[in-house]
Length: 132
Image 1 (tube, rainbow, N blue to C red):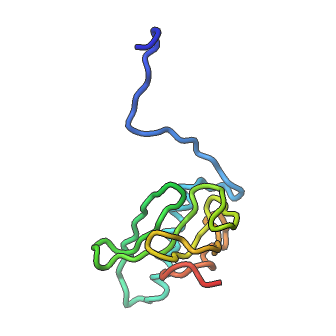
Image 2 (cartoon, rainbow, N blue to C red):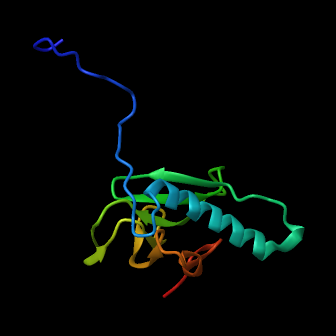
Image 3 (cartoon, one colour):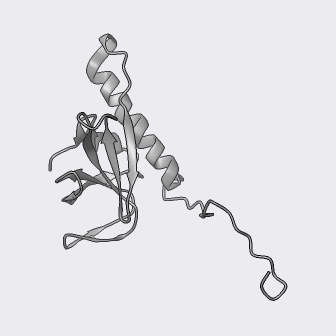
């Protein structure tokens, strides 16, 4: 107790759910992105492919890395999603921007789309964000 006030301690950080122009929170938009990637994979493979992609998210300071595969020899980076507004390699970046991977740990310079866009599925395929 500090000055008669008991601090509240918990293991999770309480974050405010903010909505965007189309009414989705960041978490909902990320879930929608993963669903759209799987739908694109299903359409590419047709009925002969009844497999799901093993997609994982690796959260960093400025970006969320979307990784395909789980075993170390078979993992590759699908792309990155910006967590915050800012500047990346001299260009403005908005929260939710989809970026192609330049390397395992770095996104490419230009944004390929946004997870908040209703037409976001046109900016990527199951293999990764589209080229410019």
